[in-house]
Image 1 (cartoon, rainbow, N blue to C red):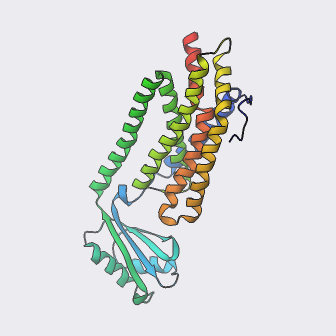
Image 2: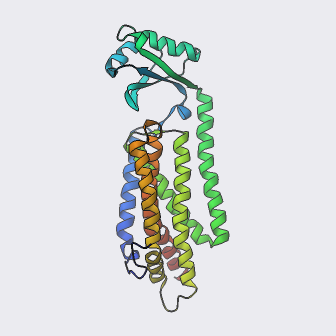
Image 3: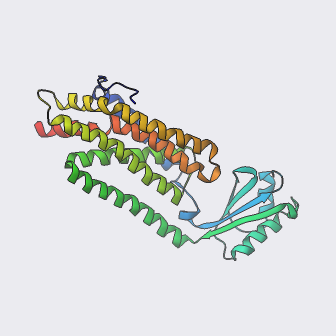
Amino acid sequence: MKIIASDTQIDFMGKIKMTLVISGLMILVGMSSVVLSGGLKYGIDFSGGTLIQLQFKTAPDIDEIRDGLKSVGLGESTIQEFGSKRDILIRIQRSEEKLEAVGSKIRDSLGDKFNKEEITVARVEMVGPKVGKDLREKAFLSIVYAIIGIVLYISWRFELQYAIAAIIALIHDVLVTIGAFSIFDKEFTLVIVAAFLTIIGYSLNDTIVVFDRIRENLRRRGKNTLVEIINASINQTLSRTLLTSGTTLLVVVALFLFGGEIIHDFSFALLVGIFVGTYSSIFIASVFLVYWDSRNSS
């Protein structure tokens, strides 16, 4: 099935300046948000601390919960709804008390505002600051190792310039997605690292399909310039790229809308990453090939 004919002649390379400006603005806005907000909003996996999930029989007032916690003395806390309005997630600075004691202490502190019998401590999780730091480092290294593996594979499978072009597109996708997380005040957790690795793999798959067609067309290039060959290659693979991304996005949108709070941020990362990855495989990855060719021919 083709939604776009393979003989289309859209001048993608003629839009290089416009797409570079769009990408530059997306990255600039996103990174500015990261800097202005003091960095990414790390989840308990990376920052350390204690997480308590409470279940109420009726939807509580978050301001009343906040007032009730002031007397507990557990340090700074954040309170938010989790899934339904009856489920409340409380994050506090790391406590030296046992997990069960923390949950009971918070439940007891809310006794003046709510009926304790209507409050259930669903879960209590604790991550120490050293463990959080180690997890941050390992998460970063996992992305670095993935990129190194990609460079080695594409350099062997294609040529060095293709590997560099693919990495530039991947860095573009990651930066835009990180910026989106900062702008929308999303938490960065281990689950999101898994989403980023998924985005890297998905974006790379689209890019390699285009690169393979470019290499195939270069073998019979005739008098065509590299820009003409890249344009033809992207047009020939455009239907496949849009169909693959479109069907995947349908699933991700369904997860985002109906999957619940637990996978909401994960599906948000995939939603942004797949959209941006499709864009970069068409407009960003091939730009470097044109630059490399013009640099070597001058």
